[in-house]
Image (cartoon, rainbow, N blue to C red):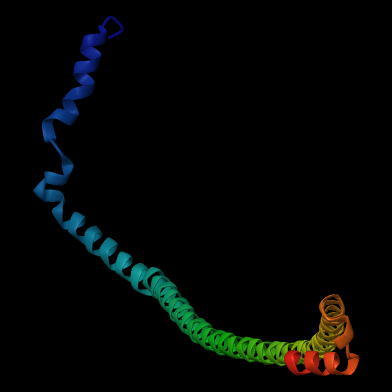
Length: 181
């Protein structure tokens, strides 16, 4: 047999397998295959029901609890944010009201100071007006006296030039006074 070729060896090795086909499809082996299938399924069922599924369900419950806690925490934070917004709005309204009160107070104070300044200016203007009227009256009186004096002097000069004999100083002063007043 030492002289056999490689082809013959391959052919001899393939012959025993070629004769029966696939052993899974051989009906004589089905009893043992069904037995082991049932054993494998029962074993798989017990492994899944006792080990894998409880672990998966506990993980799912833990995740559901975590999600519920997160939702509760989010609702709590939302309530806090709404309360903070209400407090912020109240503080903002209070600050606006205070600012308006301060502005009104400042306007009232400015108005009071302005009224005082106007009253002071009116008093100064009235005092200056009275003083000016007094000075004008003095100037007018002085001007009337000056006019009277000039008129008297002029009338004397005219009477002296035209009628030197009829020159009466008292009559001339009386005539000028009646005419000027």
